[in-house]
Image (cartoon, rainbow, N blue to C red):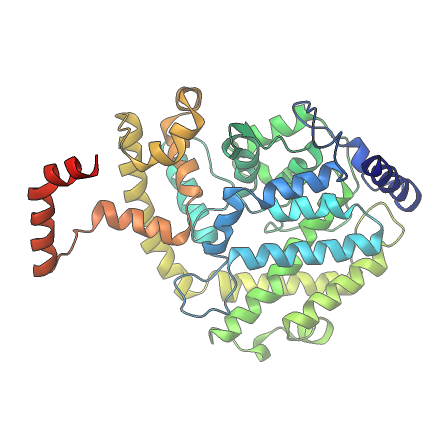
Length: 409
C-alpha cells in the first residue's frame, strides 16, 4: 500500500539522518494505546500531536491572549498567537540545522503556552497569588499547559492523548527563569516523572525552576522561547516609546545589535555553531553574557516598568472579584453559570467531584481570552445600560413572550 511505503520511507529517513541523540518518532509513547492514527496513517506520532494541538479549542484562544503589553490599540504589538508561531519557526530552524526531530519540536512549540492566563504573566501571578493565599496550591502556566492538553481539552468525547516527549517538553519549556548555563543533555523519560513534576509544580513554590526537558528537542524549544520573546519584547517597547534602542547596554549593542532581527540571528547562529554535532546545547561565553545582559535589561526596563506595574494592580483586583464570583457558583452548584456550561458540563461530574472548587475556577479563568475575561467581569459587576428605546423594546418582549414562544413552537 502507498501509506505503508510512505511510512517506511519516513522511518528510513529518521534512521539514516538523525543522530543518535535525536528522538525518533517510532519511540513515541502515548498514555493510552490507540488502534488508529499512529498505526494506519502516513504521519508520525509527533505530527499527529502537532495537528491535535493545532485543531484544539485552546489553541484557537491564543489569538486573543496577551504576550506582554495588553489593552494596547496597536495591531503590530505581539499577541500570544504570534509569539507561539515565532517560537515554532525559530525552534524548527534550529532543529533542522542540528539534525533533530522537527515534528517533535513543532508539537512542543505549538502547545507550550496553551495554559497561559489572559493578560500574560500579570494574569498568571494574580491567579497564583489567589490560590496560594487560600492554601490551594499554585498556578504555573507551563504546568497548566500540560493539564489542559492532558485533561481539559477534548475532541468529541476523547482526550487528546498526546505523547510523553511532547508533554515533557511543554512542562520543561519555561525559559522565563534565570539560567546558569545552557548545557542540556537528554534524560530518561517516564510517565511517573512527568506526574511527579506536574504535581510539584502546582504545590511547591519554585519547583518549576527545577524542571528541564528530557529531550534535546525540548531543550531547543526552551531556548527558542527566550530567543523569540527577548528581542520582540524589546522591539514592542520601542514601538510604544517605553525605551529607545540606544538605551541598550553597550555589550548588547556590540554583540547582539539593536534590532529583533539582529538579536535572533546572532543568538541562533551562535547556538548552532557551538552545539553542532553535540548531544547538548550551548552558547559561546561572549554571546551568552550579552544574552544575559539583555534579559536583565528587559526585566528592569520593560517587564517591571511603571505602566505594567499600574496595570497589574488593577488587574489583580479584577481577577479577585471574578474568581470569588465564579467560586460561589461552583460551591453552590449554580448550573446556569458559565463555569458549568463552558467547562464542568463538558468534562462531567467526575471532574467536578475530583477537583477542588478553587482549581476548577483556575482552570476556567486561565482558559479565557482577554476579551472574554473582561466581558465576564462586565456581566457580573457592571450594571447594564439601556437607553429609552431599548427599555421599550425589552418591556414589549417580556409582555409578548408567551405569544412569541407559542408562535415559534
